[in-house]
Structures are given as C-alpha cells and as structure tokens.
Length: 419
Image (cartoon, rainbow, N blue to C red; front, side):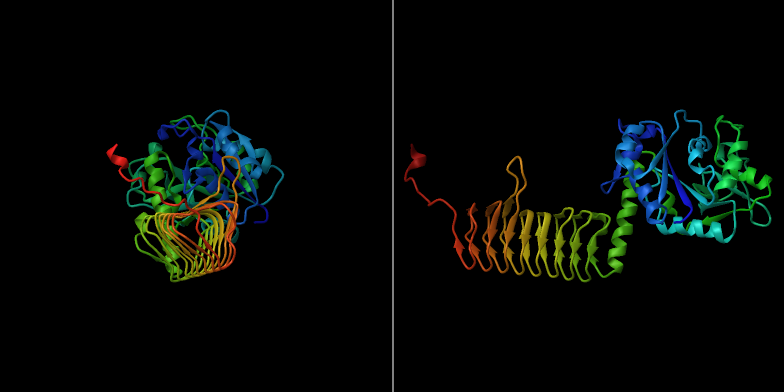
C-alpha cells in the first residue's frame, strides 16, 4: 500500500510461555507468530515493514531474515518507547504508519486494510482498532467525548471504577498519520503507575492539539487475540482451524469433523471433496474436485492431487503429484513421486525415496496396479498399464504392460520348529 509503513512490535519477553524460545517464534500451523503478523501486514498491501526487536532478538531475526527492517529496544520501557526506537524510519516521510503486535497472529489483512482506509477517509491523525467485550477486564478502555471522538485510552490499572464499566476496549492496533505521531512522541512522558511510555497516551496528546482521532470496531473479536502462554497458543490454533475449515466448507468441501481436521494455510481443495476425520493437510497442497481424503491421512507440503483421487487411512503423501482417479487406499507412504491416472496403490506400498544421503524420485505411469506390501526403491519408473505382484521389492524400471515379480522364491523347511 503506497505511503504506508507497518511497525510490528516484537521485543517482549513472554515469560508466561515457560520456554527457552522467544514467545514470538512459537508456531501456529507451522508458522511463527511474528511471521504471521508480518505476512498479514504484507497481504494487506504494506510493503515497508519494521520489526522492533529486543529480548531474544536473534531468534526473531532468524525467522524474519531480510524480509523486514529492524529497530532495537534494549530496555523494555513500554509500547510508546518501542515505537520511539523506529522513529528514524518515519522521519521526513508523509503517509500512514500501522502499528501491529507480533503476538497477535490471526488478524485478517482485510481488517488492516479497512483500518487504513477509514483513517484516510475520515482524515484522522489516529484510528484505533477497538472491540466490544462483555467482560473487558484487563484491557485499556476507550474514552469518547459526547461527539464520539476518542479522547483517551485508559489502562485498567489507571482507570476509575466508572471507566472500568466501559466495554469498548483497545486492541493495541493503530493507524497513525506519520507526522502527527512523530509530534506526539516528542511530548510523551512516563507519568503512570508503571513508569513507562504508553503509546495509548499519544491519543490524548493528539486531542490536546485539536487533532481528530477515531476507531474502527472489529467485527470478529477473535482477530485481536494475542498469545501470552501455551494455553492461548492452543486456543488460537483452534480459532484458526475453525476459520480455515469454514472457508473450505463454504467453497463446497465436506469436512466430517472440524475438530480433528487440520488444514494449513494456502491449501486449495476442489468442490465435492470429502475430508474424513483425523486428517492433516499441510501448506501449499492442491487437491482437486470429488476426492476422498482420510481418515487418518497426512498430506504434506507441495502435493498436488487431481480430481477423484482417494487417499485413505494411515496414508502419508509427500511431494507427490497424483493423477485423476488414482487410489491410495490405506497404510502407504508415497513420497517424492509422480503417479499417473487411474492407478491402484496396494495396502502397505512405500516409495523408498531416501538412501541416507539423497532423495530420489519414483515415476508411476497411468493405469498401474501395484500389489500390497510393495517397496519401490527410487529412482525407479513403472510404465503405463504395468502390474506389480504383492510383496515385491522393485529396484529396476518396469516396462509398460509388464508384470513385475520381485520377491524371493518361497522355501519350506519341514520340521524346522521341532529341532
């Protein structure tokens, strides 16, 4: 988004996680919290992103790499102090700056975009993202004047009994006019119980200067939930699971049990596909229409399944392309492979794709029948219309229309167990 900068606050300790890792590098669905916060900003159209790092900054930087610029908060002196550390990225610039939190990972990009648009449309110096909570305990309260303009944000520990009854709360997410923010930061002082520089005090300072401040009330309160401990981490994982699964069902996918189906980000699933319980589908997977997946199936990153594919119980698919109408019904591992159309992969079949040093590929043609308990030792190619006998260990290419039998002849030793 043109002339808009995002600042992601990522300097906190997160001691309640009881972990040797930074809170911000814990993952939801395979992505670190801070990475999700940065990606949400980028998906909203913001290109320039500054991460304010401090405690265990090396871990945060190892996750974000060179995708962002960095500001450093060596002392934890409050949210206002954190933004002060990024002032050099703002000075001399006009436009907007959005302040996000690295531990708020499931904020929708559309919500960020709406916040910026309202700020521009209403010509406000600051626009806050707020929420209405029936039980607002622990949150800063929004103080409005008779005209609805936001006069201040009062932290609960500094609030009066009357102010604590207010149900509109501050999410900690803001859109500021850059120059108005810089001017207010110059006047910010730590006159509060904690002796910290509160970013919330910027709103009061702006009002004292006669500037307009306002709010956008978030439609879905779960978007602004943060992570402070592993209980909240699991809660947000559930929220994201419900959100993702709901979108797929709206698009025509049948999910039999939302609570046991884990579909990661950036997965495409065609209409009329059925997902049975206890199924995991990782990121960047594409599944066609009218497929059947699970139960107890594991589809890993980068797989592409065409229409009418069946992946059954206790099957793991990894870096695989599977052709239309192919069935992998149960107890199989198919990794680093290409499987053609209308194949039947027997129970217990595996691609032996790793020799301890390198991963190799298995190519299976169209209309191939693979008997149960077959080992395909890659690199190997099975031609169209080939049959492989059950119990075979295939180490050489199988020609088209051939029957491959790769097992040792049975020998019975009479009386062996009587010795």
